[in-house]
Image: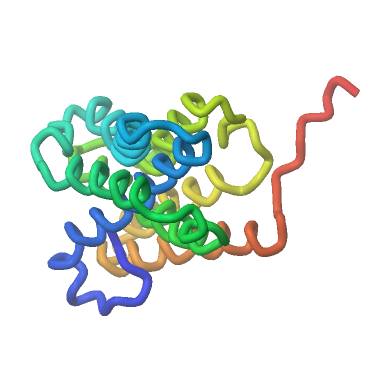
Length: 212
């Protein structure tokens, strides 16, 4: 996981904590999806867990890595803790766009993290970039399906596209010889910028018109 503003020198030490912060953001989006439907604490916890770890789980299974949250108890604890916090706090605390902006940071950073992990496991560049997209987006897709909402894949907004930009940029810069820490900062910044602009200006991809 990479920060947007921390000096590159502290990236390796900060990476595990930044990973957990992004995990908490995604878990919160899952718990909130259940909370908006007046569900039980168990449902909030389940939504938080599958949203938080879903993408990373699929990535690890595909690249042959140990599933990260099975071997690191902090990941599940963060997801369940987030669900408990949302369950015990007023709904008004979670209104507004703040969570969307945190999600934008997490999306870009998680895409870079997933691509970097895939490269470290010997995955070729193109599949490695796709692993970054999977890491960042699959949890949200699972959340939407469980909540009965249109999946992020079925919406024109630039969400998956921002993750793809971050992951592909990291792979390209790293393959071109840029130090991984610098590549991570540049790629995550590019993904976040695209997602932020899409949120601010309501950018979206054009729909297929071939049948008209």
